[in-house]
Image: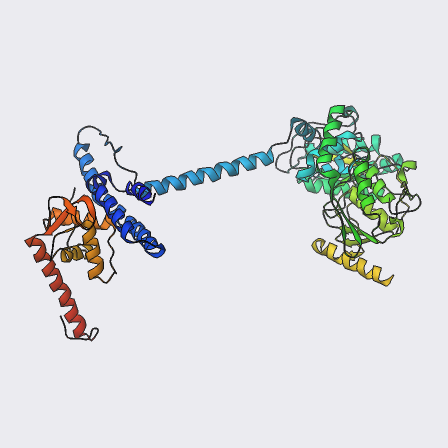
Length: 489
Length: 116
């Protein structure tokens, strides 16, 4: 066996050497192998052989090389010639280079493939939906509808979320009712014509859609007056223009859900109202099932604290069973930690369902996007539920958005939970989205929600935590707080 | 095949010349003899051994004999090598050269002793 290996290694030598001394080399190997038995001598033998190869092979080629060069050089003067080297083994240098190149190619291709796979939408319908609803976009904050408090962004859930968004997309105004103008703006610069166009569209939309017509009229008058005074003439930056209009609209209305948005990227077309097909719904259910309805973790931590990590408030009609199973498994906990640090929002009906477990009577949950109806109350008490009087801690981060903020805000206002972590993202998304042109759009509230609390909601500001710690420390802090509270009992 | 450079004489080639000073040997015997005369420090591998032998053959410092068996090692025909007069002369001059280094080393108090 070892002789065969050595015979193979001998092929590294130039053919001339092999022809002359190959048999002798093998003979020498056999002699040594016969005489030097045992582990150590055998090891030494192979060490010698390999060291010998390392030294001799390059030297043999060094001597062989000038021969070839000389041979080809002789003919260079005449016609181009090819020197046939089939008989020669490749040089170690060439082998090494080949190995490095192959490895590089392999790594490059696999990297490119994996990157390509990440960027590619999982299926055609997800792509279509994403085109219909702007993903991870400033305008998205107003673009998402009032029924689904979702902000895109989580790649892993994006497909499912887009489905959730589109499922109830009805907040998007029909195309014909909005004053849309197609006019691209380059590099964030706006000229007088563009300013005029945006202002006219904003005025028209306010008159037509704002939920408080009187206030709407006052805003319009204020904006037109400022325009007359030439206050906008010097603004050439789209973002600055949008900010100024937004703050002026809010100055008059004191409505922080009213906004005008500039986007350097081309805004997607105004979403068209469509009913979700059975097929889409089935796909959405399947996607939700795969991610366990975004219940990432449900467990008991010592001494007996229920820990629930929820990353999305999925639609109740799809995920009610998963939600109640999670809550049942935590039913005998002495305290509960709800981790919303990675929660980007979701459906108000799930926010309500989850909140229902924390009360023994129906409670009003404020939602800036909805008119107050009987749907605004929790379904408390939940039969068999033991958690209504247990301490609740909600973990927050700056990535806690939208529907998750509704959950935080209401539980905080009701003094039902202790918020631990960071100020939340501040995405209320209560306005209806109206696309003005490729770069401007505005969110206009069309509902009259009742906020029973003196503290304004989280639009633009986020929900302040009760105990401020870094998001990464929030769980540890909450566990300590819960333990201390349980010990006092 | 270009001429192998034997100037300066590589130590492997020098040791091979020395090993053949007393008797004709085949490759493996040369290797063992070299190992013995260097106190086990130099164990010639096939590549080094045969490329050195080839160089020495080309320069006619050694010559190749008719293949024959080695009684000790069994029924296998082996190529034997013999030192030529030129080879003996080369070995002697190399030994002199090294002896010159020794004298220098001794005069610089790097090496003690009085032999060689």
